[in-house]
Image 1 (cartoon, rainbow, N blue to C red):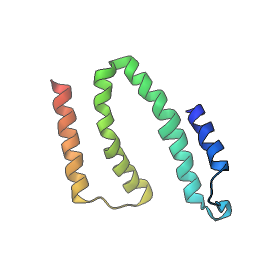
Image 2: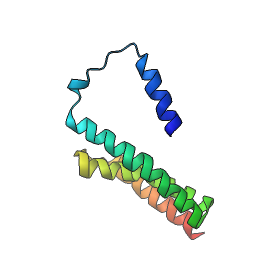
Image 3: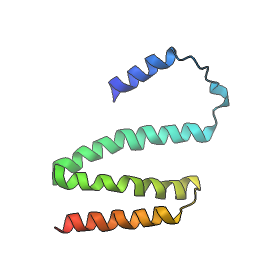
Image 4: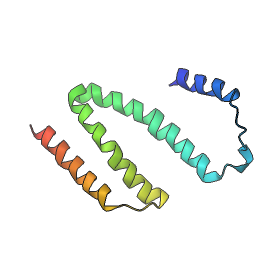
Length: 103
């Protein structure tokens, strides 16, 4: 992650587009902070801890929860709507994970 971040920052210096940093709102900065800390740092640490505790095969099944968590986060924290297709997808995710973990 550190190497990838460094490469992104270096390439951003040579970007053809000018970024108006003063026009970026507070909500965007908080979203970026959440993405870096929770999704990036904590997510990786907890993922590898989970792999160590339950093994790769069982841990991999939990990656299917990512879209479900994203929908719920956006609903509760960002005020987005949840559509029927997303509910159906969430139900299919839960049924699929339940079936895999049960067998």
